[in-house]
Image (tube, rainbow, N blue to C red):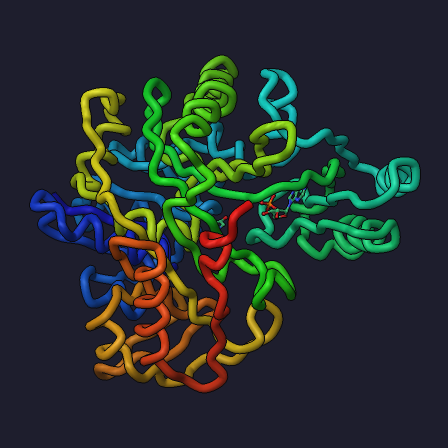
Length: 422
Ligand code: AMP
Ligand code: GLY
């Protein structure tokens, strides 16, 4: 079967690597892909947000199945457009991808269906937003309504910080139209974790729990990034808690989407906080997380294409999705200065040595004449699987330390929280 994957990050490299193992995938294409992906798939230079371009490519190359991984094309209706052209695709349609694309939508959904989340209000008018902030005070959280590369959230310790956030979103339009509306919500406390679930709108299959590290520097300092590393599974997420989340959050969410006439088929990302009042939703995403996918899919034993197609055909209940009983850790190697300002185009050394110890998923890389060069903020995701979390972390760092390029940066404390007793 000829399969096309849309996207160019570490997550897409992990998805391609898993699909490549399927005996039914005879040809793998990726648009636009990256340096690492080009070693296992044919990369085609069509942008992930180019709906018409992707549909044309799929037709031209007689692609049988398309996997749409990133948030933007999902929100723009790439799956709808492919289906309209008679091409099967994995991922939610636009009317369901809105669960990520609009925070006002997702917060309203949770309110209507009693799904636990932080108290909130939304505003179209800046003066009203500022007046509300002065009334409720800090600490408080300000979020841009729309997609903002995971960076449209400010957890403000002071009223001044919160006011600045509202002004930069609504007046200075830091995130363009995404910030024309803001959500202001109660600050929750507690450990955070991610649970990715496959769903066909009827059945929900939880993947092993994972935890991302969003800040740029050690000890959760510095600006928010797309994610600097992740590990899986998370010990706090006990079988009892998984059962509770299934009944209080996951099933109600999937049923709420059905009740709204927005059947969700694909991967739902549940960003959870384990608050003193129980687990609550921090955010929903309509897709696999990056970098969570790199460690999570490293533990998958079942053929990923079988799982994807079962979701598309709404027969997920018939499939037994199996996972390795092991631990995985992914350390992201970034360009120094990311997420603010950084340079690209540096040659990357040590990839072969690192690859002997762990799996090196590429994100912002480019291949040229047999060499690899940096080509983005997050460059690589070095991912190790082992029988213990200690070993997975040690191996991931041993491999990451073989790699070098100019002005390279990585956090040194990925998965540290896995060893902290709470
Ligand atoms: P989001 O993009 O919505 O996941 O937010 C990014 C990060 O901001 C989350 O991973 C949390 O660490 C933090 N955050 C978001 N909402 C809240 C909240 N209501 N209370 C505390 N922290 C939050
Ligand atoms: N790692 C966070 C995200 O994918 O949104």
